[in-house]
Image (cartoon, rainbow, N blue to C red; front, top):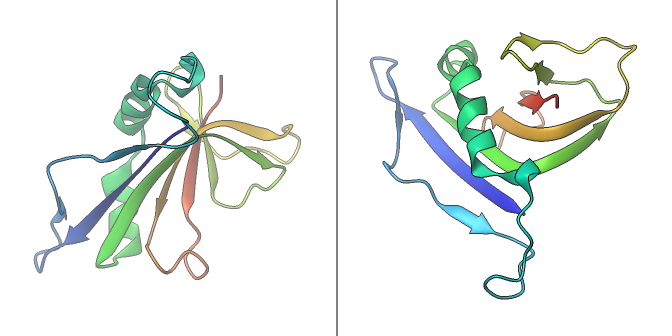
Length: 129
């Protein structure tokens, strides 16, 4: 599994900036180098392409919070829970799933406010494949 966390902050003018110019990637569930089989469904290019589509800056401005974060933990199964779910379609369109949709499963990027996940619902962007 591939997981990463990226935290942003807002300065006095409201400009959003990252605390770092680097990205830390944690490999989880690997018992030694080279023991995991490559899975194209978890390729880091998915994350890159998703982040180009997701309106991160617009969402962050809506929250008007000092800190915010981006989290990717691979393919997630959200079941029928639609709270905070946004689906990214094949052409990059973003929509809210309808109640008649089946289970929500796919690579997911979450935007959230660290420490306030129970007060402010994270936005979860799921790539529909």
